[in-house]
Image 1 (tube, helix red, strand yellow):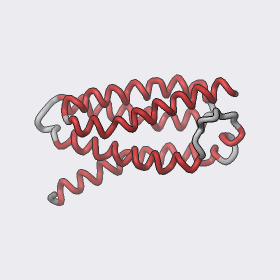
Image 2 (cartoon, rainbow, N blue to C red):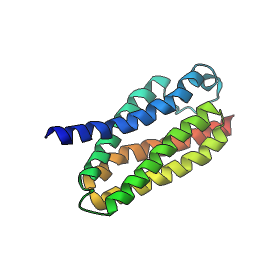
Image 3 (spheres, rainbow, N blue to C red):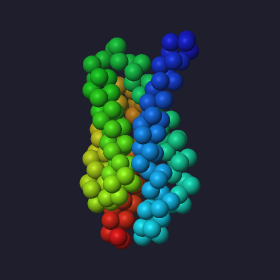
Length: 158
């Protein structure tokens, strides 16, 4: 891999982690105070699980984005896929703001439904461009599916 491609890969990996950092500004202060006070379902993972799970998912997102960008000169489909990727990543950050920052699980549930839909759209669009890129997003889609159920359960229990 030449230096230019390595820099592009590194930038693609950093993009989701920058989004994660923005979300964490709203998440971390609420975890020790507000979030611990919520009633959570029996299947809620311990808090320590979230950081490594998200780190892996953000890393896979970055590699997925890189694979699509590698094909961007070959197809107009890549532009649409990248736009949808950016949309879902923005919705990812917005969820943290709504759930933890605004401490509004109900609105966050509505928002995460949109996130789930846009992650699915991203998988669909990326599949047209790079099957590897699409498959790298499947664990993220599964995690967001779980997070959607967890979010709804928190709404119902509180």
